[in-house]
Length: 184
Image (cartoon, rainbow, N blue to C red):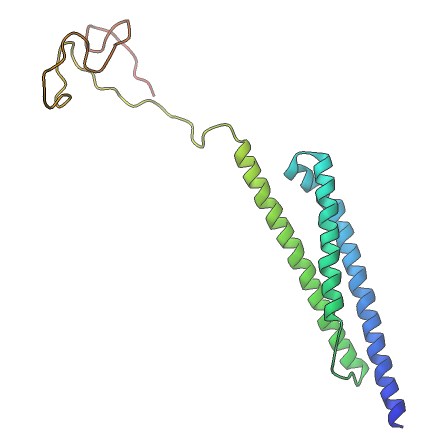
């Protein structure tokens, strides 16, 4: 009688393993195909080259399969005896729930990493400054021949050339009645 009871326990556990593998592998394949199909458009935007996007997509799918199926295989073992179908269902739901959490975590990690890569690439491609200039700083005008206070604290004062260097041709600030509208 004891041998028969042990055989029944073994059958429930074997069925639990088979259902766990079928559901987990099926979910992994479904999610991987869905991510590969729908992620292709995203990867083409991220990498801006279709051939590179396809290659990265294939590598991500292979990595996804390896990580998830590796987890499914490692998490399959259940050392405690399974005495009833309800206990098998509880264990099965825990294991499949963990598989789903791993699938979701891998998906969000990939989206986060690729989104960060995309933002960095777009930032590098940007050619304009972060803020457009809104005007010019006012230049103080000094009458011709006036000395700049503090320009030469010691020593002889320069003669001839203007202390600020060569001046552009045309009307000088303060040299006469000019009407230049203020710049904004």
